Every structure is written in C-alpha cells, then in structure tokens.
Length: 436
Image 1: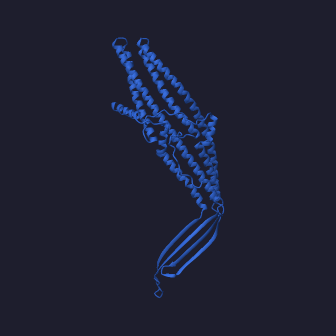
Image 2: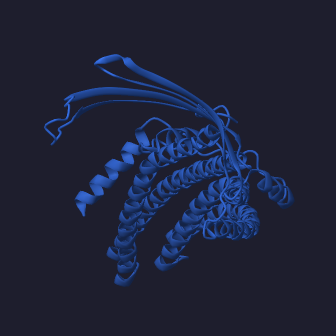
Image 3: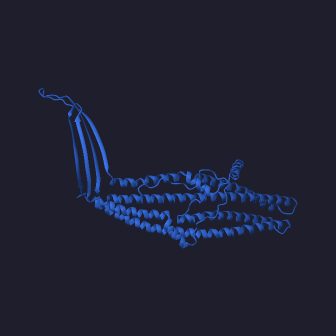
C-alpha cells in the first residue's frame, strides 16, 4: 500500500509540475501523431488512386514486346539437308484507343469520384471522432485531478475530526463510539483517495494513448465556439457537414454508377488499333521483314449466359439498399443532433447547480464545525456534512467535465468539430485529388 501511494503521489507531482498544456495543443498533437488517424489517411490516399485508374481506360494504351529464339533442328532422314541451328528475333509495338465504350468510362469515373467522396467523409469522421475522444480524455484527466484534490482535502478534514474526537474522548466529553466513527470515516477516506489516484493514473494512460504524450498541467478548456443557436440550425448544419451523412450520400452515388457500369458491359465497344512488327534471322540480314497494321475493332457481347443481366439486377438491388441506408442515416443523424442538443442544455444547467451545491455545502460544513466546538453538533453530524461537501465537489467535477465534452459532442454531431483557429495545429494536406 505504501509503495502504491508513493508511486501515485509521484505521478500527481509530475503532472502538476510539468509545462502547462491546453486542449487545442492536445488536439494538435493527436491529429499529427495518432497512428489510427494516420492509417485512415493512408486509406484515403489509396482510394484517391481509383480516379486515375478509371480515367486510364479512356487514354491510349501502348505496349512494346520483343523476343529472341534459338532453334536446333535434327532430321532422321540422312538425305535431308540439316541447316543446324537458327537464331531469330522479333519486335512489335501496338497502340489502341477506345473510341466508344457505351458509357463504361463515364460510369467508372463516377464510381471512383463517389468512392473518393465516401473515403474523404470517413477520414473526416475519424478525425472528428479522434478530436472528440481527445476532448473526453482531457476532461477525464482534469476531472480525476479534481476528484483526487477533493478526496485529499476530505482526508485532511477527517483526520482533523479524528484527532479532535480523540482529544474529546480523552477529556471525557464524547464516548468511544464517537471516536470510532471518526476513525472509520478517516480510514474509508484514505482508501477512496487511493482508488481515486488509481483512476487518475488510468485517465492519464488513456490520454497518452490518444495524444502521444502524458498530460502536463492541463488548463481549463475555454467554451467551445461555433455552437448552433437552436436545434433547427443544428439540424440544418448537420445536413451540410455531417461526415456520416455525406458518406451515405456518396454511397448512393456509387451504387448508381455501379448500375450504369454493369449495364454497359452488355453494350458495344469500339477501339482503334495500330501496330508495327519486325523480325529477322541473326545470321541473315536479308531475312529482315516488317509489317504495319491499322484497324478498328468492334466487340459486342451476344450471349453471356445471363451474367450481365444478373449483375445489373444485383447492382439495382444494391442501389435501392443504399438509398434506404441513406434514409436510415438521416434519421440517425437527426437523433444524434437532438440528443447532443439536449445533453448540452442539461450539462449547462448541471454546472450551475453543482456550483451552488458546493458553495452551500462548504458554508454548512464551516457552520457545523463551529457548532460542534460549542457542543451544539455531534460528531456524526459533522461527519455527515463532510460527506455532503465531498459529494458536492465530486458532482461539480463531473458536471464541468460533462459540459466540456457536451459542447464538443454538439460540434461533432453537426460535423464542425475542429481544432480551434489560431492554435497552429491545422495540418496542411497537399495530397490533392488528381483529375478532380
């Protein structure tokens, strides 16, 4: 137990003496170093390559090939002339250009753009979720510190009461029961302090996992800016900015493009082709020959066993499913925004009420202590008031934590959560979409 207390005390001292840190700095550090977000960024970059791949089908296709062969000939007829070994080479160049693809390229390009839009929305959603998680971790550490401070003060108060009860018992003013009650509360408070310190250590590690470094004297987070004025404006903002809703809309465009792509597989395809080939025998320069070819190829699938029609029906069913998913997502976003708005209003009221509770409990504690000294209050009454003060302090720490998170939860619900402007932590993304 002593070793645990020493280690937790050292952790608290290290946090309290380090350089001050702000919520904006924590968000910046997380956005720059969090491996989960970095992995999501790489997935986005991989998805962006779908667009040049789709556009490549409309560009010329050029290929070169060359070969060299050596042939040994053996004849069973002794009268046959055996020319022995022959060595030849050939080379060719071919170029083709799609002239008409029945909408294949257009459909694949639309699908690629929809994939990119969906991946971008997924990345933005992951980024905002990370910022929200960092906010919660930041607020959790501050709450844990406040709880440890409150329980430390509670231990000091109960220790004072226990020593006072001992003195009163030795003077014959109170009974052994009063002393035992004070001792029991004092022992319980020390146990709860150790538990609170353990919870603070867990909160610190959660913060380190998200931000990449331990917390350092976390400052009080400022009130969030850009919050909607009312529920109607919050819902309107979510329609325009919610990554979840934008991703669902991109899925519907992707499904629609897949229907056109599947249907185009059963239509005509016209390609212009040109080629040049040359070959000769290594031992005979006069054997060299070459040929040129130019033409147009028309391909039209006539019968594929019903596969093309089946894929088209499949794509149409998936398009209907994507539209239904969009409707479900709209309902989820509306629910999320409404709950976030309600939670924010509740958090604001809770902070005000908790602060009033702390002020009243502190005043009552001081009054009861003075009344105890004059014999108007019993030891149990003082102990109960100490417990009430502790409960109020912990409730205030919880309410302040909930308000910080509720404000950012509201911004995340409407899709506008970001690092505060002027913090210097915005990452410049130079990996722009090609072919946009």
